[in-house]
Length: 103
Length: 399
Image 1 (tube, helix red, strand yellow):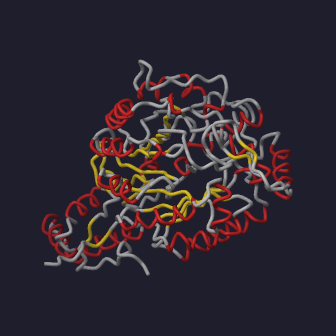
Image 2 (cartoon, rainbow over the protein chains, first blue to last red; image 1 turned 180 degrees about the vertical axis):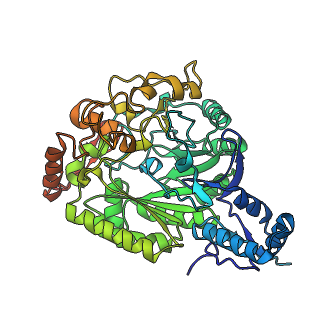
Image 3 (cartoon, rainbow over the protein chains, first blue to last red; image 1 turned 90 degrees about the vertical axis):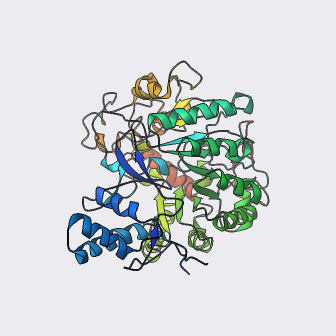
């Protein structure tokens, strides 16, 4: 069985980076990076913005709402892009689903 | 320890919003500080694997950097822009101060990876490491079948313990990489090793064929796979990669003796990698000390690590292409593979500036390929175990 790490991203997902993937601003190279086992990924500006919004509270729909408002762009197009980007990250093993609140 | 740090990772793709940073960096002659550094904090190890990547001449514990010296190194690495450190060895958990070092690395913002044989770990210590901020655990396996695995490691009960530690790793929610070092005597177990990695809920599997330097070179006749074995290995890896997509990432390192083109060892000498030895030497590769005639600067010297990386003679000696002789010098692939591996060139030809004999353009390629083929078909299965005494021959086998 696949673990909770291997997720399928949808509008209602509440994704977060798992503890082994760390988003960080690299002061030396002046770029954002995702640190992961044996990998340093260089997310583009949009990916960074999306990931900063993925706090485990917001779902993918909320994230898309916020970006649509900020860029005055069609929400459906944004949503589709966000899902593709996050699913790519999930497929690489660098995205997890926030745990359900138990209380 | 495998050579994965020097290997290509995900290929760059213009449409990929998550491109791998190494691939985006300019290939111009500016040698920015590496993203990741290998710290071989000790050469002590309870295992005696005959293919150990440590030098044949090991650093004794009295020469090891102190806790304070390693902490200073970690702070300096973070300051100059290193992002990840791999705690390796020897067996890093043989250092009593490992938790303290991991904590310090996390405090200064480094991403930490533990490369371990696992046999010395308790659940409590692993938990302390996780609390100290450890980000990832890589456990080496010598096989899947207890008898063979323990024989290769020269350590009874080792395999069982590794399985236990792998389970604890996942229970503590740490990502796990299984590092499987492959050779003639265990390649037939590859499908089971892949299944074991899935069962252990590993994220990554490194199928690392032995690279023949140092200890492994001494054991080449007992380890070299046949061409047929290797072809089968490649087929199995390709099938598993497809089948386990999204579930288990498989990195694959082939033995270069059977290749036509040499590997871009360490991403090219002094281009994107360095390691620090137990005694504090800053090295372009973990086997570099096998090349005689090179002086390696230490973190105990008056020089900063950044200075050593940029300016020391050892790092500049084989950097770029200016040092090359023919056939490398005018070769169209010289900026692609940088002439292969300097340590292998030195070990097999006596001159590190020669073309790596793994390259088909080396005048020695044919001879070495044939020799490997002969050894692979041979009956010598007896190991020379790795230890501080210069090695001990296995008793019983081939007798």
